[in-house]
Amino acid sequence: DIQMTQSPSFLSASVGDRVTINCKASQNINKYLDWYQQKLGEAPKLLIYNTNSLHTGIPSRFSGSGSGTDFTLTISSLQPEDVATYFCLQHNSGNTFGAGTKLELK
Amino acid sequence: EVQVLESGGGLVQPGNSLKLSCATSGFTFSTAWMYWYRQFPEKRLEWVARIKAKSNNYATDYTESVKGRFTISRDDSKSSIYLQMNNLKEEDTAIYYCAWRGYWGQGVMVTVSS
Image (tube, rainbow over the protein chains, first blue to last red):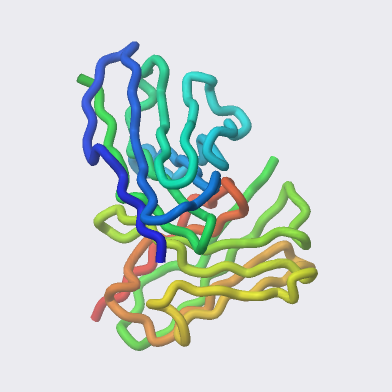
């Protein structure tokens, strides 16, 4: 089974900061990596699919990059509404989630 | 607009059964691969089951921990999928989500406790 190691587990940043969250796969997953945002009490919401494709309606301050085993979610300028937990999901072989990154405002 | 709506959650005793339903609209259901995911109380997410479309012979896959206990099915005439959960265990306690691609429902809580 493919394991996903997500880092950091917790992140504190200020409005306007550039924020990066990483996921590392235990083996090559090609481009098949998605990023989800989950706000308190809500279902996960897709932000980025297949490494770098922005899902419908998602602000352009969100972007994804990477290939193979190493992937990054970037928020170019943090907004208050971005406070949430972020998960990566690989779907190259089965489906495996990262453990999540809790993002808070400093 | 894509809509995904789960129902059927609740409190059950260990060893008992429960059937979840998921009604959808806003996309071509008959060709869609559909998924069940779950989120445990500690917030960890796990894929539970997948069912492919008729063109893929409605093939199904399950995470190891539910094989032989859970069954995913679909009714294309109702644009719905189901998750029959038998022999439930306390470790199955979670919020269960139905999903098509990146569109998830709001989830239903399943609590297994005596």
